[in-house]
Amino acid sequence: MPFRRAVAILLVTQLIFMAAEAQAQTPAGPAQPPAPAAQPQAATPQPPAAPPPQAPIAALPTIQNLKVLVLEGQRSTNSTTRHIGIQPVVEVRDENDRPVEGATVVFRLPPSGPGGAFPGKLPTFSTGTNAQGQAAASGFVPNDELGRFDIHVTATYQNRTGEVTISQTNSPNDLSLQGPVVKKKPLWRNKYVWIGAGAVLVTVVLVVTLSHSNSTQTVTIAPGPVTINQ
Image (cartoon, rainbow, N blue to C red; front, side, top):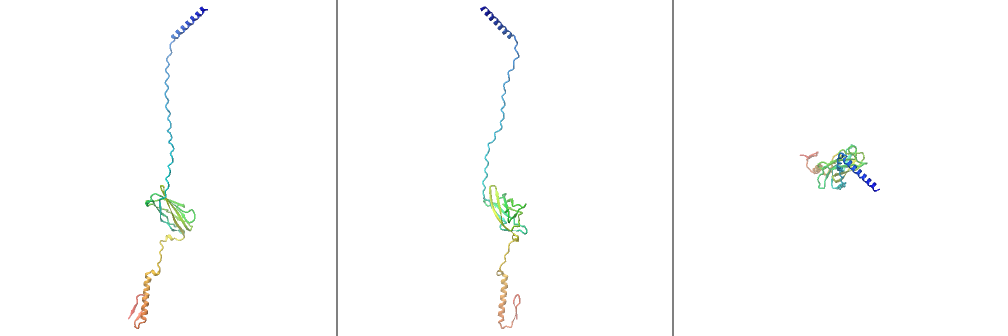
């Protein structure tokens, strides 16, 4: 048994040497190129962050410090028979009493009853002030309703405002279109009446005086100056 074990070990040793020699004699294959290094990935561009929402700007408070003065149309009378109206005209001034140019002026008529209409048969009319701060509601035509009514006027400039009311009357009489009314003076204030009365008084005195006289003078009374014939 020891002999067989020794022989087996010897054979195994030879086989190992033979295998080692055969492996040493086998040509080595081509060298494999090294694997390329991994390229770093480019960073993906991120969209810009949205700006934070801003709080809305608060509107300036409205200040009622504009002066709206009525230049024409206050207490005027419109003709309903001729359909002719007095155009309202206003002037806008600031707190320092200076004209406001570029202010928006809106004229508003009552929706029903006495009143009228602006161009286009509209109840409102909007316009701007000129360099003198003046604005007119051109094209106003009264309706057939008789009576008094108000035209509401509002002026705005930036955050300032002002208003005024213009009162007018619709009438069949053209009172506002006939010009100023001339008042007649009483008779006792007319100088020509006093001159005539004085002439009559002088004539009566002369007649009474001469009628009591014994003179033979002939007195002739005629209109105009008194003539005495000798």
